[in-house]
Length: 137
Ligand code: 5GP
Ligand code: ZN
Image 1 (cartoon, rainbow, N blue to C red):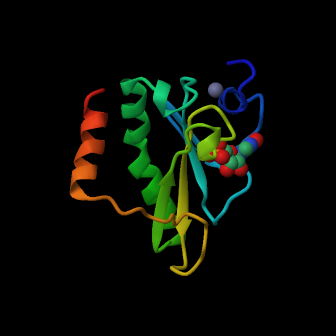
Image 2: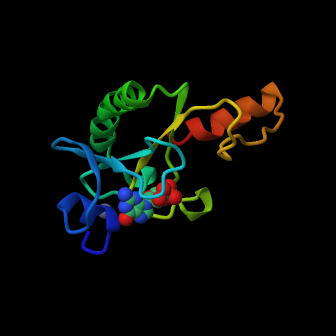
Image 3: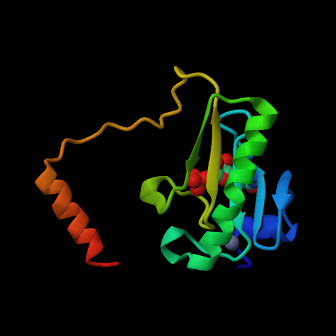
């Protein structure tokens, strides 16, 4: 996509700090890291978000994920790591080329705004929710 920031990063027309590349994926440092080692992993094939990602693209993307996570772990010894993917502006997506964030965690007490309040559902409500989703698989 000619007007996509991350497609331009993949083709080199916009500079990035590359960490890893294979035939299918590209990983680079986030320009505004929320923690040391914050990395983005993206498919080379442009997909806006998870909703429009072909299964094969997903397979190839996630195949590279353990490698990236373990390299971050070996480099900086975080005590944990979040992988996060925002889909849609309402979910916090600002760049509309799918990307998986790798955010290492160094301090159990550090607040990255990643803890969300939970709701209480009865088991019947959980079944109803599951059935609604299953109907579309
Ligand atoms: P989102 O909010 O869409 O999930 O995340 C987009 C991420 O892309 C943000 O964390 C932001 O810092 C990062 N980002 C935006 N523009 C650039 C850029 O030009 N280069 C790099 N390396 N990261 C970027
Ligand atoms: Zn793109």
